[in-house]
Image (cartoon, rainbow, N blue to C red):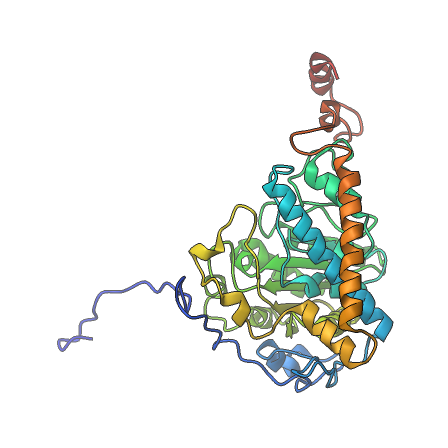
Length: 413
């Protein structure tokens, strides 16, 4: 304020990331609680009584790879080994499909590097019939549910065996049988669809719940906020997942987060219990997912979970992250690599070893390569079989309208 009492001109605040390309990575804003330090409330806890969980980070694995605290002890060694294999499979699948895109066999791909624990662990906490409404970085929901990799690859290649018949962009999978709703390229639309599906399940007095998925950047969309209104008002049986991997395609998470402090805190204003979890800790992800899923199934309403993780790779094959963040930033991420962390935990329990890990890597690579060869035998983007043009007319209407019949006849399919 000036001496004469008049205010100066206004200025617009635009959040800036802590570091730009060429600078030293800085994650001082990521405040980590000790592993095992965060309490585990009763499933029917009042949202008002657990507000602190929206500002802390639930962790199970400590720096020595030990599982500690009240969220530990929910998985057997065999289940953890299975989870490790799922994450390793997803990572190998990603690597092969990334190469395939560079070879021109598909037009587009998005990898999950560094985020494998989020979807792989969450899927194991669900029951058959539950429905996920995913984004484009939750293929682990399919991998962990034993969805055939050949079909995933055929969808990526848009070949004659594409289960979606060329109607979707590569990696936008869909499988009702595996509880995987069709991915939408329009950001945040699946979030409000998930709430509607959950409300319908409740109206029918069914037992199935829904899981909505969204990235940190997409929480800036209006559908995100509309979803929270409906979920909280009608106490929909749903888990609302926010994957905070620190970056949208080129925009750091502070833009979408605004002044809320954490993404989980967004749920508090709607009276929704909200938790933050270490997204690179398979055991913690499973434990928190199990808690929220039980809450939904007991008709106690929605839960919002923020998974704190890091997108180690590019946003997609169309992105160059070196243009907007330091090249070494992923190495400095304080929560580490989910695969390495679970591997070290299992070695510490004497049920795994470096040799067995290398052998498993080789076995998984053989399996993925075999699936890739089979998928490519049905065609790729520029070679081999393609979906038939007649497929665009089929499965749209129960009875085909006259104008579409005429168009099909004109097309000769």
